[in-house]
Length: 176
Image (tube, rainbow, N blue to C red; front, side):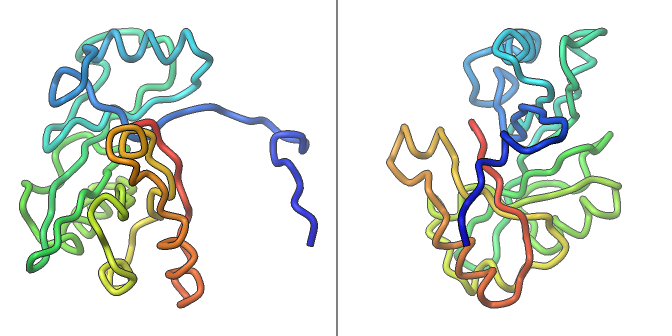
């Protein structure tokens, strides 16, 4: 089957990033600076996902220059396996950190948000680590920060493996 370039197809296309850190955790820009930087580069939406801290963009800019989505990157653990669960579209912290990843996903869903698993390759996740999780929308299949810092940004093999085993989730590419 031939592959078609998706952006040449009819429809409305939006550019955004759902995994961004600011000075509220380990980022280099303030939330206001990050929103402005992304807007100046043609982004339409941005999820600010500081570590274990909900960043509501409207606390920093009353009228953000793009759709700014309250979000958080939540640390979780199951046994010896660490997970980072990105939670988007929540108004308050859905759960405290260091909880089980499934418990975290369930709490995000209960709070009306969406979640996805960040950087599976960076965390050395196996298919089994990912297959047991339910209720999230997807996994990061490319993470720019992990790629530039430690050359572990690609997670296509993880996505392919879980898709082939029947878990239909989206693949997301992020800036981090």
